[in-house]
Length: 208
Image 1: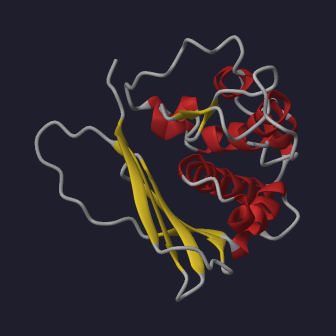
Image 2: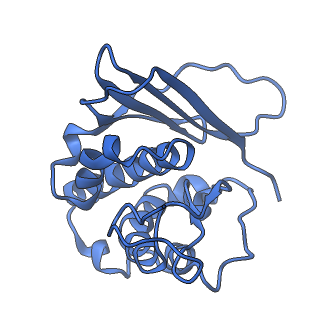
Image 3: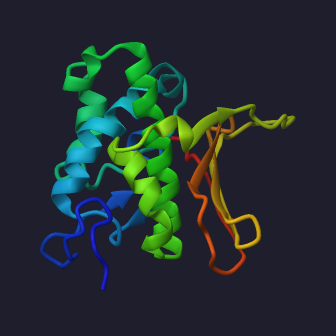
């Protein structure tokens, strides 16, 4: 039985929500109904996701990619991200706090993708504490140098997520690359004792 990973309530047809693993306002198209209840989706979307989207605002404005418009009425996170440029309660925070929230947004992408694919909540518990701000996020997520990729012809940016887990090293990690430009490493757990795993996701942003 699936539960909301943020508040632990049982997910039902009445309270489940369409969660974009990568925020819709960043061109994310992978949707899961197995992660967050509707109220937590709105709460985390209006705080964490809105700051993450605003962080990439200047970059995304230069890209001509499509967004999923079908759920805008119900997806208050997308509306908040697109209709405000710093009007929410997080906007007045200092740069260091905002950077922490950006890293929490990256961690949310990693946790959401892992749980969407595998669903082993126990291995994500510490990561969820980081996401909630109960533990320092800098011990979990950090920006890393992006890979050098030479592009030819008509370059179309994409999002990439790769998850690996090893019982030998006890590490469950995710590599998140947004727009082929911004790379992050997320340590979801340092107590992993499950099977060896390696899986990923790659999606090219669709042009208008």
